[in-house]
Each structure stands twice: as C-alpha cells, then as structure tokens.
Image 1: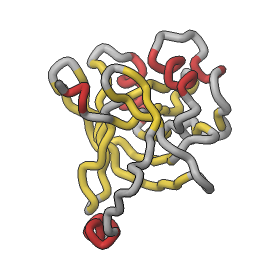
Image 2 (image 1 turned 135 degrees about the vertical axis):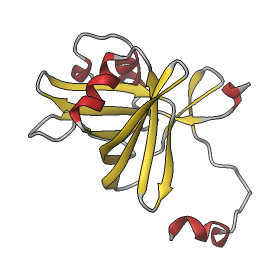
Image 3 (image 1 turned 180 degrees about the vertical axis):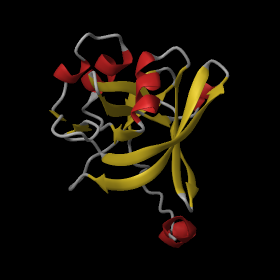
Amino acid sequence: MLGHVPTSVCIVTASTASGPVGVTVGSFTSVSLDPPLVVFYAGRTSASAQAIVEAGSFSVNVLAEDQQEVCAAFARRTPNRFATGQWDLTGNAAPHLDGAVAWIHCAVEGSFPAGDHVAVVGHVRDLSAAVGPRRPLLFHGGELVRLDRARGVHTPRHSFDWWER
C-alpha cells in the first residue's frame, strides 16, 4: 500500500578519504524547521550510508525528471557511479550533481537503526535550487514517474504561508 505514496528521488553524497560516495534514496524528508533538520533512510547494510555517516557531512541532490540514468547507477552496485551524470567533485565538499532540482548540504546530526534501514539526520548548513524550471523525478507504484501539474485546479498560495516562516 505504501507504494501509492509518491516519494522524491535523491542521491545522497559525501566526500571521504577513499573518494566520493553516494547512494540513491527514496525516503528523504524535512524533520524540523527550527533547527533545520532533514532525514534520509538507507538500507542498514549499505556501505555508502555508513561512509556518509562517518564522513560527518553530506549533500542531498534532488533528482530532476531527466536524471533516471543517474538514479539507476547509484541504486545499483555500479563500480564507478560518478561516471554517470555531470558531477562537481572538486575540493572537499560532497559531490554536487549538475542539473539537479535542488541541493541540500548538511552536517550529520546523528543516525539510528530503523528496522532494516538506518536513519541519518542532517542539520542543514546550506541549500540552493536550480535556476529555471526543473521538475523533480518521483517514485510511485514501484517505478520512476514524472510530475504532471493538475490542470484546472488552483490551490491558494496563502494556504501554505506557514511553510515559509
């Protein structure tokens, strides 16, 4: 039944002494606005998730609808995941995917077991969104899907004023 709940598709990355690491996640969300906290969930046995926690900081790259190949490369045990997509691998910062919808840079606040997953909580340090129209890639019903705006339906923006505080 939970497959009926659409989720974002992100690649969480970090820089480590052994090189860049990253993993595709479909469970990413905001936790708190004050302080600004987010969380992602990865398989408990994920070596990439463990490396991200040990790195102490990470970036969430929110995938755009045309980045399905990048999503697939980071969802599998591809030897050189960063060969797919255009990545900024300069400096000590976590890798940044060109063309993503948004980027959220975080310090690891903590992690804990959550069933067969590990929850990694991040304290948001910086964030940015793509310039121009970029639409997100979503996961729904067991497959990657594109967002399509509801036609003829208007939701008053003032209904969401609480979100922008």
